[in-house]
Figure 1 (cartoon, rainbow, N blue to C red):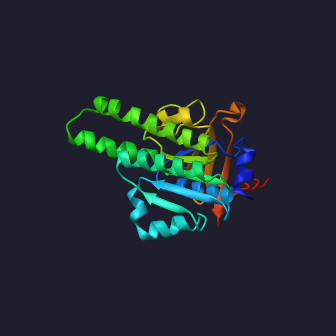
Figure 2: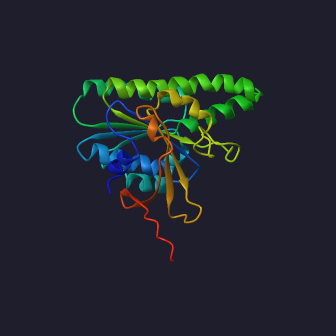
Figure 3: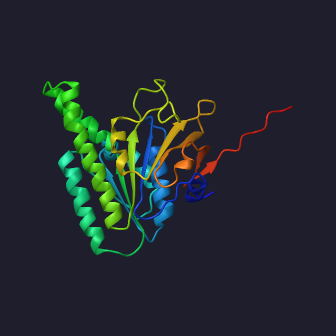
Length: 244
């Protein structure tokens, strides 16, 4: 089943000017899901840009894995400094304004690594947790606002990837899920959809995809489905009926 069709059944309609946030624990497939969605949406004739803040993108094996899910002409730029992330998105916004043909997707992978790198810097200077947060949160807010502005002004789809916080089990988030998003959830003002991707503990080949927030169709919040990565798409997992 095409990933876009499956997402539509969950009330998530992939189209221009929208920003999709994907969060979940490490190594659950967030970047893979983003690549699949971007590839299906843009196709070989569209344009996909990945602004990568994670050092994994310097690993040739990781890049080869990610490339399997992205269109052949996808452009990947790895930038680690916060000011360079802003400059990259700004330059991309100007470039896309001049080129109005075809479908475009911008993936920011990830907002959390921007926050982590800033945290490491401020902690190394001896700044406490609260003062560091006061420095980091406005940057994350501004970065996500820029991503939304890019999507709207250039008629593009944007996808932001985040890591979940380590507070699972500390109370349900929005009454839907116990897996809370990280501090980067403060960027939620820019999202039209927030999806959680988690591992199915009963069968680790399966993932659980949940709609945690839906700005345009709030009635779909809490919708969830088990999926599995199959080739360059995702398939719903059909639960076997218990034997009677």
